[in-house]
Image (cartoon, rainbow, N blue to C red):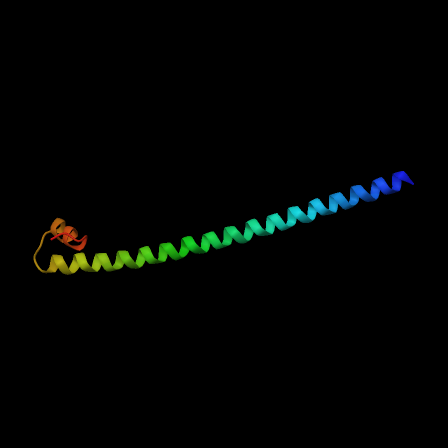
Length: 78
């Protein structure tokens, strides 16, 4: 009889640990997916900001300034 109770306790402990492992694995996957989504959104905003900056530089160069002056102007310089 003691062998049966020992075997049942071992199975319950193994099931509990496997369940905990599964929950931790799923949680880690969800956190990873959220992090990747946040990174993707950050890259999109950088891309749009780059387009605006390049447009500013092109417009400033069209007014007759040099490349260096245009970049300085678009970065907030005078």
